[in-house]
Length: 574
DNA sequence: TTAATAATGATTTAGCCC
DNA sequence: GGGCTAAATCATTATTAA
Image (cartoon, rainbow, N blue to C red):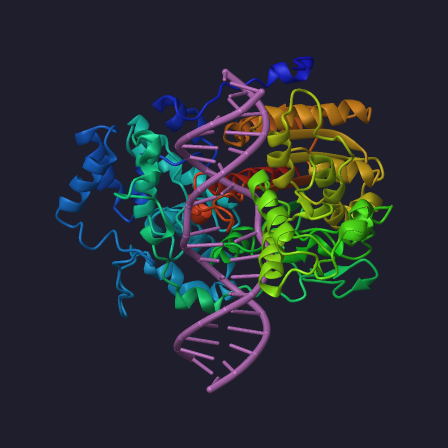
């Protein structure tokens, strides 16, 4: 579409995913950190030793995961390894402290991990990311306990590479996951993706339902459980601040400032893991219903100051009737909603709204309680609004834009379909909410900021900064969807931005060398901002709610990886 | 080929009663 | 604390229409 930018051409990456060669998997993308699920890390995550997995893959090739699993299970010491917390078959071992290779240990320590000295915490974090305790300890000894996680991980790689010249060793193990996130499911997913015919889900043989995998709550996690505050107002709302000061862990303090977002209502334990990895900062839980007329329950982990925040003007309406005044005349008294629920990526079908119209027509002017309950449930579920006599309808894309704080028609044009607009908008920030948090940057950076924007989507962060009148000197934006990249670039043009917009496609290609090169060219990053994919976390997902290790949501680890690289490079500069 | 449509539950928490 | 109900939830897939 645009193909206009000289800058872009310097950063053109080949796609994609499914057809990546082993060289790409284990070579290019490996140097700087976790890249993507591999067979190797998959079986490591299941608890098998690296040597066993390597041997099994060598024997069998990579084509048949099931055969590899069989070899692993049949091998002599298979019985003890693949037990992980949360596996349906796993029994919790009792007092088995001396077996340091056992996954249970991390969970045992979670309740006092905060109190550990940095060295021990780093050790645990590395083990939590999938490295063996021996490798992690050796790396800390080599590099010193002041080193960043990235440097330690690199050191482990170097040692591994030195030890074995095999290319397979160049991988960066996918981080391991917390209790309850069983790995047997991942095989099911992969198999479905690669081999299964499409109609598989319809068949009764192996339909993929949540019953395939039952999560077992971990008592250890409960100890360290993050409680979502009620009301969900974060550190405070405009004009009613609750907290103005907080103490951040030393290693969390910038530069750069960073801001990470994801849904608040995840499967159990997810925010505990995210928080632990993002330098033990406690999430700020905020429902955007306090900023606009639609709910949006999100958590934000950031190291920004929280004093002196201000909100964007004009202040958006907070009720449906104010935001969508045309609906008022049709709104029945018995529908007592004043705010909308969360805006999703898809909307109600015509059939749903027509069923409501029919039910109302059949029951006269005063529908009985059962009919009203049915209609209210559907309206809440699908965010329907009243657009006529006995008529409800889903919101229009432009109404999504308005409620989320974007300029009207932000996602319109450029060949973007209505369906795509809903998807992109449903996945986005609520601009006013994010802007409120970012507003503290305005006084700190009067000359503007350099932004590294990961998972940019339609540019919620950029719109927020623009509306705050914070000049964006350079934005390096990483976004997989071409549609979204075009939307952001159109915004950049429409608003006549003077700064540079560099858009990249794949966060996994953003390695240390590239980040260093970008920083050399444009200067250090002042803000690393992004919300990684939530689709494996959200309750709306009936098929692949796989948790933080899901195909898309595991990109959180790439957010951390990139952030840690930036932190490390900037620390060196100082 | 692309876009719109229809069909597809589980997880988690809160509140209530006992 | 256990059992029940209600409510909310940045989705995915197959099919059909354009």
